Amino acid sequence: MQTSEFAKMWSKLSKDYKLHMENELAPALTESQLTVLEVLSDQERMKPSDLTPLLATSPAAVTMLLDRMEKNGLIQRERDLNDRRIVWVSISEKGKNEVLRGLQIRDAFLSGVLSRISLHNQQLLVYLLGKITA
Image (cartoon, rainbow, N blue to C red; front, side, top):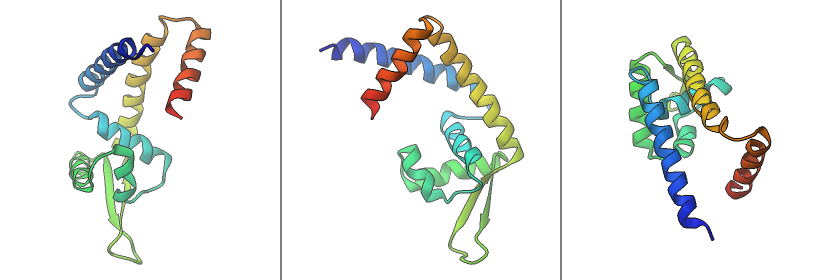
């Protein structure tokens, strides 16, 4: 088994990715905020509870994250007209601009990493990662 070597490489790649994203997204955005914006850009609106499993965190942490995002104009919250207990979260215009910027930053980093190997090996890597994440 190659678990030890895999763990070292995975750890290095993860650290490099996180550091790059943290530096490039700042000060307007965090990686967690980018995740929320990316999901919201595909949906018209969502309930905060729908975001909790996507972020693998607690409902309280999601609420705090959404509070910061709303304060910075990245999202909008509104109460449901039929059931005031339900809060809907949607992406704002500023959020749409920031998600585009964030995805460009992410894609540029990953393109740089993947450019070190051939197109065939890139396809193989994606295939193999798909096998181990299924």
